[in-house]
Length: 185
Image (cartoon, rainbow, N blue to C red; front, side):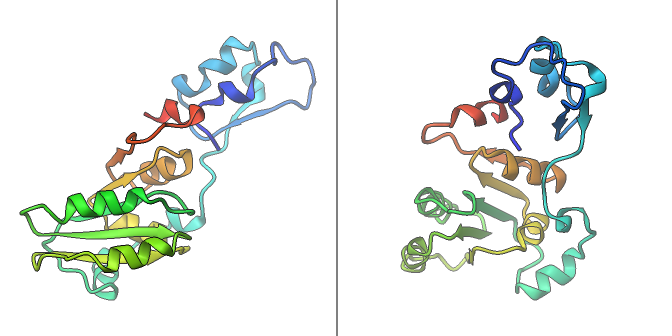
């Protein structure tokens, strides 16, 4: 699932096992470069696409989604997503975003971090800003469709999902970036 494949190729050089295949999410020279250095034959490298739910490849009706979620058409939507487990960093981002003078809508995806829901619900939200708090859901593709920008951790799945949805990403590096996620930056 990671875009930095070098960690998976440690100790592998010029593999001779006929059933050895390396599956990559994208046909990209930067991603495949470690495979070239490991002398993996091109016929044993397959681009399979990123591992994501089918919902990321289905057409979405933005007007219907906005209506379903009671979103105003002319307000930019900022999605804050820190993975399925969630993160206390979501509160930091929402706290900063609600200080904006421009009207915005924030979609805060807390994942399984239900503790942060109470914290976010206690924030004073100015009248020109609206906030939707999303628990763990299988509808992330819908929310990414609605977002004008996504603030997210640099996990490969979130990054790949944002790329598929063609939504600009702002990758969080306010805490330590995991070694296998550095390539994403």
